[in-house]
Image (cartoon, one colour):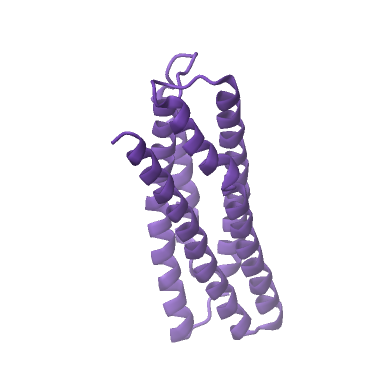
Length: 193
């Protein structure tokens, strides 16, 4: 599906850059979110082993590795990205369910634990990371549809539109979540200063 023209090559290179940056941010975020949960709540079970974190890191490396390998074929890239976003929604749903369970059981850590838990509640439940993930699914699925139609019709314009859909949709989705996380972390910092 890769068209031998300069514009599509530039779009593929841009997509490679965005995907690589997204992977690095994603790995950092997963680790930060797990640490945050352990800091905010008293876990009545023993502290989670590093094994699950390693499994998630390896799985993400494989998933993003496949994406990086397919930046020149936007159809396969968008298909893989859609599957990754579906898995992301499932993961976010599980994190939200676990957080809500801990919040309802009120097993806060320390004197400021309840206030900290309220800050986290706003981030995890009210901000709806699920909605942001759903928007990323729409962007990747739209890119996939544009790529399929572009392939079937031989339209270079639709192929470029598929690249642009992903190149615009992914950074916007990530910008939203980074902004929300920054607000959450600033509120937590103010709580402890």
